[in-house]
Length: 339
Image (cartoon, rainbow, N blue to C red; front, side):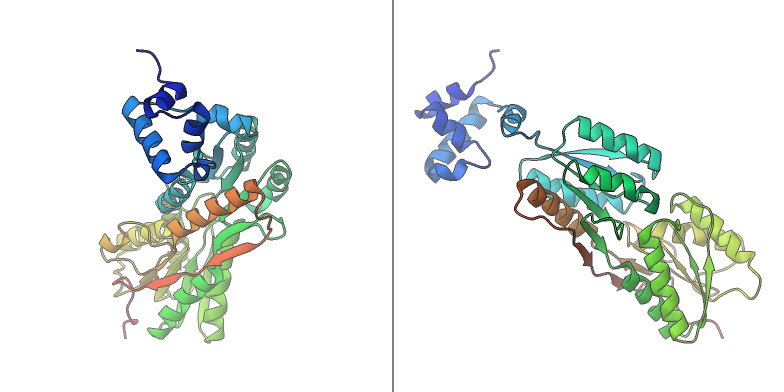
């Protein structure tokens, strides 16, 4: 069967080819009357016309693609972020090319080079450790790049992120209001800004209230379930009495810690209250349902996509960081300490 061409569509409607082209163009359709645009669109659908968007983009010096880099695709929080990115880009006729680094700096460098070789119009990355600052600053010289979820202060790269200091503070204030005075936090990888900020917010709030804050760290690369078990084990081996409340730097760490506490014979929240971070899907279905800090992942992804598009179009050039506010979600994993 012969491929349907733009000329076929134009003849079907009774307009010239240039009018049909404008009607089907995402950036020139306003030059055609609504009735003609509707007739051309309906004809294209009826005939099965598929435009060559790549050729059109190349004529404008673009490929119509955006590189989207994630650190860990298995992280349940990343799904809503990617959906926000994809929906915002598709509404502008852009195709996201998603790739994963497994939070490896070496892999990040390779991925960035491959995306640049593919001539993507811009890059959105949720991966970025302190050691990656020089690399990402270099990439920013070659085209628009936006940080999402994580920040790299001092890099000059625009970021859409969460107010992680406020999130850590919310977790501490909730536990303090319940009456806990000896608290611990299970920290994520130390060379990632978001986890450092959560630690700072939590620690400062506990200290300000006169409580005791125990910081538990481990040489973990990813904030996973296994990392949560390892951090919980270190807490159980820590000198001194067991804290009555624990703040985990993300929900995966919290779930791993709950698993380890259960093996040790500790009940939640009777023996230890636990707060997570992110409010990933199904945390409300755990036993007990997890108290956590909710972050607007979809909105963050949407804003990151819009920012990279405006940078590509030249309508906005910014190095600012936009912080989205967290929300405390109280469930059954937290309670006042046992007398």
